[in-house]
Amino acid sequence: ARGRAVSGWRDRAECIGTDPELFFPGRGDDTSAAKAICATCPVRAECLAYALDNDIKFGIFGGKSERERRRLRGGMRDRCRPLAPIDHGTTRGYLQHRRRHLEPCQACREAYIRRVVTDRQARKDDAA
Image (cartoon, rainbow, N blue to C red; front, side):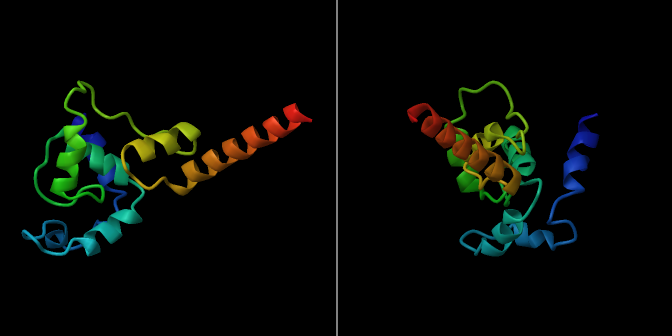
């Protein structure tokens, strides 16, 4: 069952068909090309969660290098549970992206903006 869940998101990854060497650079090599591909990937959060949950030490996953994942892991040592999937298209999803140091997807960004505008309008209406 776990293998099917993993392959599901992997099948939608932007890096499919890309040279794997790009995502496993040598020490001190440039990672910007791999991170640029990750930046447009629809399953970036799932990829990063997979690398964090499985303590993967090498390569670029979810747009983060091993050093960046180590920093994230440092703040998560006390957590016993894996990261929940992001609720895309919601204000909560926007906040989940931000907490994981990910750029929010368009759907989450739009939901957050709608919420902020609605809250501002409600405050204006209450003041009037």
